[in-house]
Length: 405
Image (cartoon, rainbow, N blue to C red):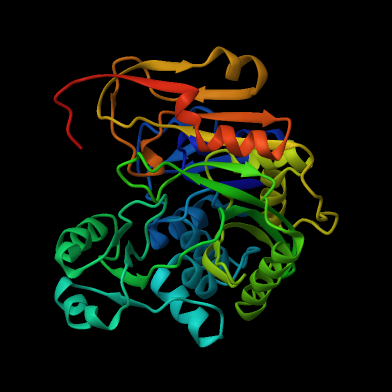
């Protein structure tokens, strides 16, 4: 029985653990949390942080693994590539994955290779940023270079808020580094979704419309994704070609990707992120409903070095969405009220991860969600209208408490 090392055992990683077992693999997980929920479904579990490259390498050597997978976790992507490279296992180049994972390195790479990119620069301290701040056109975005789920991301109009927002960004950065980049005014929805390359060719992609809530404390955290993208085909092809150019330049091989992309009013494409991992929050599950393509299975097959050449591009059929159930307030969780009409006519699957009496926090990052909905609609118009107004269709019940974030 082949051994697969899965990096992370969170709730959202359980589908991949289950899928690997169903494929007949001996599944081993590692996570810094000893009480991670994934261990209940794996054959074996170890308490090593997924960001500890040398620790995971030592574990992988001792276990004599056949493959290593980073599913959903942005932070663990470099570790998976590093360990695979050291052990001669199928993988994308470690240096390339590191560039894709670090926002400062990725922005530099884009600029050097003549992609559309806003003025951006990485900094280690507030003092450095102050010296260069007036060289940026307002407004600007402040981002940790290595966080995921939009944690620590802010938009500011002047230097007055720089101190506060830099501190917030650094709080979410493992490398204690942040970037300042000029704000891009997008036209239409931000583009998300997943893709997959085989021997460096982007053979599959499923673009989504990303939805945000202006009522959230952090309005830059997506609250949902809807498929398919409502962009014209020629713009989707333009995005595809820009992604392919990145894969070529970085010598990427076989594996999954998650996208964050903007298109402006002149149809210029801005690649915000191309993460070398599957998307989180049920994006692979929604993609499977929409296209029939099992991205989880292909991710595992790719890590094993198995043939993935049968994977082809299939356009989404129907209108599908995932929505992150989130609270606008911090307090004690008392449940979720889902409108009867939404339940009866649109809801396909759902999961509530918070339990009655749990502390929940106002939505500032994807890790703050209390559950997920998977929905099906009859038209693009209906889907976008519902997804943009989801607070009218469900409510998180929170009892006031002294809980502070």
